Image (cartoon, rainbow, N blue to C red; front, side, top):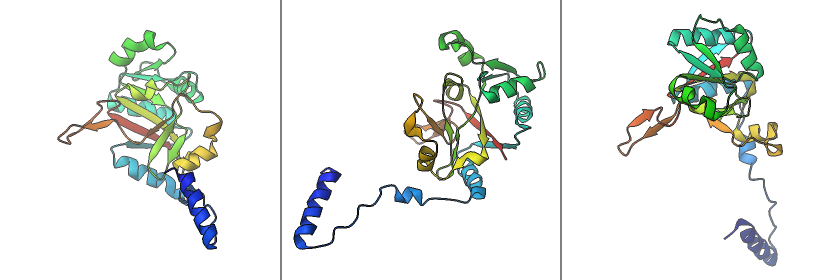
Length: 220
């Protein structure tokens, strides 16, 4: 029975018996009550994401481009795909030392033009995030023409930049605070860790349907 029809029937029965009709409560009250102090949100998000094999590199607003380069060198990455038209993409490219590490490859072509290189040569994709969610431990990605979703879905390693001041308590809070109802992309992504799946014997495998590694560069 639909919820509205059920409520109408109960209301009529209570009225006929002379019983008080309770006020209708918001279905979202329980979500609005889930809050954590600002200082605890990052710790909670990190703890929950590390539990599913997400890796973290703590960095600063000034130093994150060089930290991305240092990490890429240390891990032996050969080619990193990025969005050249985002503010962060411009910063990354301007600070990159040519010949001192992996190639920095701009995602500035159509899928058909970049497909072979994307699937055969790129071993990491760099993206920004819209923030994170403390309750469940996850990143919010907002794909756009400047930063297509394939950046985070195809390369074996996903490098994600997170501003820890933009961690929301819950998904509901993020929805309301950023007014998602007023306009969304074709899809929004919530990512908690590297891609994983299991077969019928429950043997867990990583990277079958997406990145094998998720590395979060957390701006503190």
